[in-house]
Image (cartoon, rainbow, N blue to C red):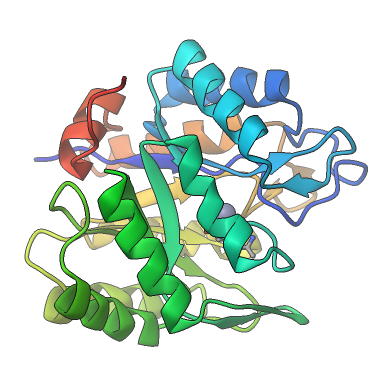
Length: 279
Ligand code: KMH
Ligand code: ZN
């Protein structure tokens, strides 16, 4: 039986370091949390960077530096976010790929995001997909709503398979404005993947805030993989703030052990996802 791929999303673009002191925002904090998460069972890291004032940034120089530092400090598959913050322009988001990560995220449509709008126009999605094909970067398709499965089916039909020939998607559930973070929604997404996407497509799932546990257990029950991290959840339990990303990865790895699909090593994840060998 295959293992469980655990992706850690340690930082995100939304949280304020002053309100969440354990959030990794410097490069030293990022590499330290990455190494700790790898020890606990993570095999992929989904990266958003912050600037010297801890504000979200898509600066290419910083992104390149972070990719190098993460490769130096860990064996993790490095996935850069092209989602950025809701305010980031499309051209800046496309330029993320110049930092030559192993993977990058590719959100499959526009979604309300709290009071904001996370804009992903069709023309932008297709440019991102094609540029990743050209640059040999493996996408992780982010699905915030059920319609995003249909959008991905259309994308693959019209523009071909991603680099590496394997399709991997991530259900991001429980965003205010997107699909709910509960077991029946995971079931609906898993079924839609099975019906509409190529055979062999793999999925992970993450639930925002308090939806993290139902989404985690439901994904495992469907043979899916996991994403956890402070981008999505900063509360470990009621009135118990997360102490660090490694705490969330450890819990995910324990759950994976319980279902007898233990956490995958990064090399296994590389093979599964079709990621090219590190330079
Ligand atoms: N920060 C959100 C607006 C991604 O990384 O690709 C988008 C996001 C998705 O986090
Ligand atoms: Zn993200």
